[in-house]
Length: 386
Image 1 (cartoon, helix red, strand yellow):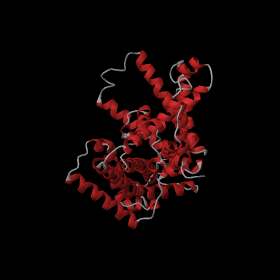
Image 2: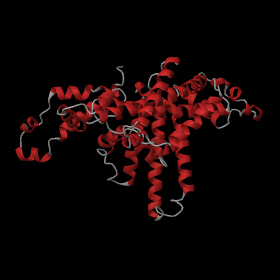
Image 3: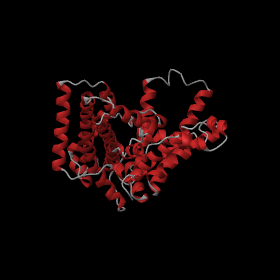
Image 4: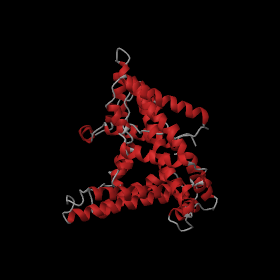
């Protein structure tokens, strides 16, 4: 299969739909013939430029013709180099590269070791199981988020602003909010070309549930045809339906704005439930066979066995099957702090000013990333597989 075939296929579907929608129904009713098709003027070179603009071609964001072509036309009219955009591009590219090679690839080692064991039919202890699942949860986040930052950075080097694809999704308090923040352009594509044509929420509540589940389920099938992806998509669909039903109940009881639902305790509880649901469902997303996912879940919930407390002081012994070290816990805490406390990289880009501090920061990240690349084996981006 060609690399990332689904992404440039989606992009060309969006191109065709954008072209189709340029002709209104009134045009057809007014002319009463099919000559209206000639009104749509599509330049072949514009099409080639749109589908081959490489920064986001491999793993998104999925862009629309109407978003890109006005920027290309404006760029060709620019009299000089846009140094401010180049500075911003280098800045966010450095952040994305650091996320990928220093954070995501560090978690990849522990996640791959753990999943390799359970996929062979073996089991991990309680602590190894949770470290494995959390390692993949953060690997996926920083890998894909890093790619999106790098794509935006490369686009800015050409003077092109790509759409935002990530907005701190692990801060979400519910599954609906998560999907508004994770892979935003894919969610937009599925909403515009699948959810709304199916009827969206314009019909009965039962039809709304059907549409929500169907879209989430197909998003799982889009990632792959294995049972793990199917189960992952079904779980996402069930969660979306349950959250919508919960909203209907609150609305019917006039509790949506109650003091308890606005309290910090309730919001923390919602975040805790949402994050752990995502962490568990990512197990099915990652495991190469269903037995491996079930074995890992058994270890996570102590169904197999729990490591004896006296070993808790010795992290290398506690995580020996993962080749874990003391730094493993540091990376987990570090990842939580970035996901929950740090400013989103896009927000940082919007506040960016070309100053020596930002130059030093970007240079430091580039240096650490390149140094890490020089001493570690290459690990491809996760979304290259889809």
